[in-house]
Amino acid sequence: MTIRVLVADDQAMVREGFVVLLNAQPDIEVVGEAADGREAVAKAAELEPDVVLMDVRMPVLSGLEAARRLAGRAKVLVLTTFDLDEYVYEALRAGASGFLLKSATGRELSEAVRVVARGDALLAPSVTRRLIDAFSRLAPSPARTGLRIEQLTERESEILALVAHGLSNGEIADRLTIAEPTVKTHISNLLTKLRLRDRTQAAVYAFQTGLVRPNGRPPEPP
Image 1 (cartoon, rainbow, N blue to C red):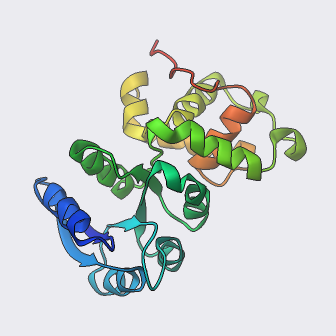
Image 2 (image 1 turned 45 degrees about the horizontal axis):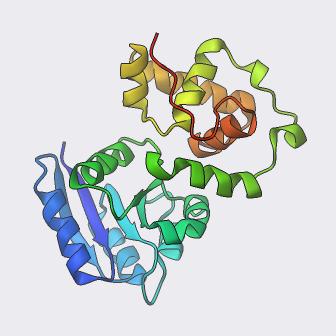
Protein backbone atom coordinates (compact mmCIF):
# COMPACT_ATOMS: atom_id res chain seq x y z
CA MET A 1 0.00 0.00 0.00
CA THR A 2 1.44 3.37 -1.03
CA ILE A 3 1.57 6.11 1.63
CA ARG A 4 0.22 9.38 0.24
CA VAL A 5 2.05 12.45 1.58
CA LEU A 6 1.41 16.19 1.43
CA VAL A 7 4.52 18.33 2.01
CA ALA A 8 3.95 21.76 3.58
CA ASP A 9 6.90 24.15 3.90
CA ASP A 10 7.23 27.79 2.90
CA GLN A 11 10.82 27.38 1.67
CA ALA A 12 10.67 26.09 -1.90
CA MET A 13 14.12 24.47 -1.90
CA VAL A 14 13.46 22.66 1.37
CA ARG A 15 10.06 21.52 0.15
CA GLU A 16 11.47 20.25 -3.13
CA GLY A 17 14.20 18.37 -1.29
CA PHE A 18 11.62 16.55 0.84
CA VAL A 19 9.62 15.72 -2.27
CA VAL A 20 12.63 14.19 -4.02
CA LEU A 21 13.63 12.16 -0.95
CA LEU A 22 10.15 10.80 -0.33
CA ASN A 23 9.30 10.05 -3.95
CA ALA A 24 12.47 7.96 -4.14
CA GLN A 25 10.85 5.48 -1.74
CA PRO A 26 8.88 2.64 -3.37
CA ASP A 27 6.08 2.81 -0.79
CA ILE A 28 5.68 6.61 -0.54
CA GLU A 29 4.15 9.09 -3.01
CA VAL A 30 4.05 12.85 -2.59
CA VAL A 31 0.60 13.83 -3.86
CA GLY A 32 0.84 17.56 -3.23
CA GLU A 33 2.76 20.54 -1.90
CA ALA A 34 1.78 23.61 0.12
CA ALA A 35 3.66 26.84 0.81
CA ASP A 36 1.67 27.95 3.86
CA GLY A 37 -0.67 26.58 6.50
CA ARG A 38 -3.90 27.67 4.83
CA GLU A 39 -2.88 26.02 1.58
CA ALA A 40 -1.91 22.88 3.53
CA VAL A 41 -5.40 22.64 5.05
CA ALA A 42 -7.06 23.19 1.66
CA LYS A 43 -4.81 20.70 -0.14
CA ALA A 44 -5.34 18.10 2.60
CA ALA A 45 -9.11 18.40 2.18
CA GLU A 46 -8.77 18.06 -1.58
CA LEU A 47 -6.14 15.32 -1.80
CA GLU A 48 -6.85 13.33 1.42
CA PRO A 49 -3.22 12.36 2.11
CA ASP A 50 -2.30 9.74 4.68
CA VAL A 51 0.37 12.00 6.19
CA VAL A 52 0.96 15.75 6.12
CA LEU A 53 4.60 16.73 6.57
CA MET A 54 4.17 20.12 8.23
CA ASP A 55 6.67 22.88 8.92
CA VAL A 56 5.97 24.86 12.11
CA ARG A 57 6.71 28.39 10.93
CA MET A 58 4.79 29.31 7.82
CA PRO A 59 3.06 32.49 6.60
CA VAL A 60 -0.71 33.11 6.38
CA LEU A 61 -1.46 30.24 8.78
CA SER A 62 1.12 28.60 11.06
CA GLY A 63 1.83 24.89 11.03
CA LEU A 64 0.42 24.65 14.55
CA GLU A 65 -2.93 26.14 13.58
CA ALA A 66 -3.00 24.04 10.43
CA ALA A 67 -2.39 20.92 12.54
CA ARG A 68 -5.31 21.89 14.78
CA ARG A 69 -7.61 22.24 11.78
CA LEU A 70 -6.49 18.87 10.42
CA ALA A 71 -6.93 17.02 13.73
CA GLY A 72 -8.87 13.83 13.12
CA ARG A 73 -8.72 14.30 9.35
CA ALA A 74 -5.05 13.58 8.60
CA LYS A 75 -1.96 12.41 10.44
CA VAL A 76 0.45 15.32 10.85
CA LEU A 77 4.22 14.94 11.18
CA VAL A 78 5.66 18.25 12.36
CA LEU A 79 9.11 19.42 11.27
CA THR A 80 11.09 21.33 13.86
CA THR A 81 14.59 22.48 14.78
CA PHE A 82 16.33 22.80 18.13
CA ASP A 83 15.46 26.50 18.33
CA LEU A 84 11.78 25.64 17.90
CA ASP A 85 11.52 23.27 20.85
CA GLU A 86 9.01 25.56 22.54
CA TYR A 87 6.55 24.71 19.75
CA VAL A 88 6.71 20.94 20.10
CA TYR A 89 4.37 20.72 23.08
CA GLU A 90 1.76 22.85 21.36
CA ALA A 91 2.13 20.87 18.14
CA LEU A 92 1.34 17.61 19.90
CA ARG A 93 -1.53 19.22 21.78
CA ALA A 94 -2.82 20.44 18.43
CA GLY A 95 -3.16 16.84 17.31
CA ALA A 96 0.15 16.18 15.54
CA SER A 97 1.21 12.54 15.53
CA GLY A 98 4.83 13.41 16.16
CA PHE A 99 7.77 15.55 15.20
CA LEU A 100 11.10 15.24 13.44
CA LEU A 101 14.13 17.47 13.22
CA LYS A 102 14.80 19.13 9.89
CA SER A 103 18.35 17.85 10.20
CA ALA A 104 17.12 14.24 9.97
CA THR A 105 18.52 12.04 7.22
CA GLY A 106 16.45 10.94 4.26
CA ARG A 107 16.19 7.48 5.76
CA GLU A 108 14.95 8.89 9.08
CA LEU A 109 12.41 11.06 7.29
CA SER A 110 11.05 8.14 5.28
CA GLU A 111 10.79 5.91 8.33
CA ALA A 112 9.09 8.69 10.29
CA VAL A 113 6.43 8.95 7.58
CA ARG A 114 5.89 5.18 7.74
CA VAL A 115 5.63 5.19 11.54
CA VAL A 116 3.05 7.97 11.56
CA ALA A 117 1.11 6.41 8.68
CA ARG A 118 0.81 3.19 10.71
CA GLY A 119 -0.85 5.14 13.49
CA ASP A 120 2.14 5.24 15.85
CA ALA A 121 3.25 8.49 17.47
CA LEU A 122 6.81 9.50 16.72
CA LEU A 123 9.24 11.10 19.16
CA ALA A 124 12.60 11.95 17.62
CA PRO A 125 15.04 10.08 19.90
CA SER A 126 17.69 12.80 19.74
CA VAL A 127 15.36 15.35 21.32
CA THR A 128 13.00 13.15 23.34
CA ARG A 129 14.49 14.35 26.64
CA ARG A 130 13.97 18.01 25.67
CA LEU A 131 10.36 17.23 24.78
CA ILE A 132 9.82 15.46 28.10
CA ASP A 133 11.23 18.48 29.95
CA ALA A 134 8.67 20.72 28.23
CA PHE A 135 5.80 18.37 29.02
CA SER A 136 6.94 17.92 32.60
CA ARG A 137 6.66 21.65 33.22
CA LEU A 138 3.11 21.74 31.90
CA ALA A 139 1.56 18.34 32.63
CA PRO A 140 0.22 17.40 36.08
CA SER A 141 2.57 15.19 38.07
CA PRO A 142 1.62 11.60 38.98
CA ALA A 143 1.64 12.62 42.67
CA ARG A 144 -1.10 15.17 42.05
CA THR A 145 -3.23 12.88 39.92
CA GLY A 146 -2.90 9.86 42.20
CA LEU A 147 -1.65 7.63 39.38
CA ARG A 148 0.66 4.79 40.44
CA ILE A 149 3.19 2.85 38.40
CA GLU A 150 2.41 -0.17 40.60
CA GLN A 151 -0.86 -0.58 38.71
CA LEU A 152 1.07 -1.87 35.71
CA THR A 153 2.18 -5.43 35.07
CA GLU A 154 5.89 -6.11 34.59
CA ARG A 155 5.42 -6.34 30.82
CA GLU A 156 3.43 -3.10 30.72
CA SER A 157 6.16 -1.31 32.67
CA GLU A 158 8.76 -2.68 30.28
CA ILE A 159 6.83 -1.47 27.26
CA LEU A 160 6.19 1.92 28.88
CA ALA A 161 9.95 2.40 29.30
CA LEU A 162 10.54 1.61 25.62
CA VAL A 163 7.77 4.02 24.58
CA ALA A 164 9.51 6.73 26.63
CA HIS A 165 12.70 6.10 24.69
CA GLY A 166 10.88 6.81 21.42
CA LEU A 167 10.57 3.26 20.06
CA SER A 168 7.68 2.53 17.71
CA ASN A 169 5.33 -0.40 18.21
CA GLY A 170 7.20 -2.38 15.58
CA GLU A 171 10.57 -1.72 17.21
CA ILE A 172 9.19 -2.72 20.61
CA ALA A 173 7.78 -5.93 19.15
CA ASP A 174 11.16 -6.79 17.60
CA ARG A 175 13.04 -6.03 20.80
CA LEU A 176 10.74 -8.11 23.01
CA THR A 177 10.12 -10.82 20.41
CA ILE A 178 6.34 -10.45 20.57
CA ALA A 179 3.68 -9.65 17.99
CA GLU A 180 3.00 -6.00 17.17
CA PRO A 181 -0.75 -6.35 17.94
CA THR A 182 0.28 -7.58 21.40
CA VAL A 183 2.32 -4.40 21.89
CA LYS A 184 -0.68 -2.28 20.88
CA THR A 185 -2.86 -4.15 23.39
CA HIS A 186 -0.36 -3.59 26.22
CA ILE A 187 -0.08 0.11 25.39
CA SER A 188 -3.86 0.48 25.28
CA ASN A 189 -4.12 -1.25 28.67
CA LEU A 190 -1.46 0.87 30.36
CA LEU A 191 -2.95 4.09 28.99
CA THR A 192 -6.34 3.07 30.39
CA LYS A 193 -4.90 2.13 33.79
CA LEU A 194 -3.00 5.39 34.12
CA ARG A 195 -5.74 7.52 32.55
CA LEU A 196 -3.36 8.90 29.94
CA ARG A 197 -4.41 10.20 26.52
CA ASP A 198 -1.60 8.92 24.33
CA ARG A 199 1.96 7.56 24.22
CA THR A 200 3.44 11.04 24.55
CA GLN A 201 1.74 11.51 27.91
CA ALA A 202 2.91 7.99 28.75
CA ALA A 203 6.50 8.99 28.00
CA VAL A 204 6.17 12.00 30.30
CA TYR A 205 4.76 9.77 33.01
CA ALA A 206 7.69 7.36 32.68
CA PHE A 207 10.19 10.17 33.29
CA GLN A 208 8.18 11.78 36.07
CA THR A 209 7.92 8.54 38.03
CA GLY A 210 11.59 7.65 37.59
CA LEU A 211 10.86 4.55 35.52
CA VAL A 212 13.15 6.08 32.89
CA ARG A 213 16.16 8.23 33.79
CA PRO A 214 17.25 11.31 31.83
CA ASN A 215 19.86 10.33 29.24
CA GLY A 216 19.34 6.69 30.15
CA ARG A 217 19.51 3.86 27.60
CA PRO A 218 16.53 1.78 26.53
CA PRO A 219 16.20 -1.51 28.47
CA GLU A 220 18.11 -4.36 26.90
CA PRO A 221 16.05 -7.20 25.41
CA PRO A 222 15.74 -10.31 27.60
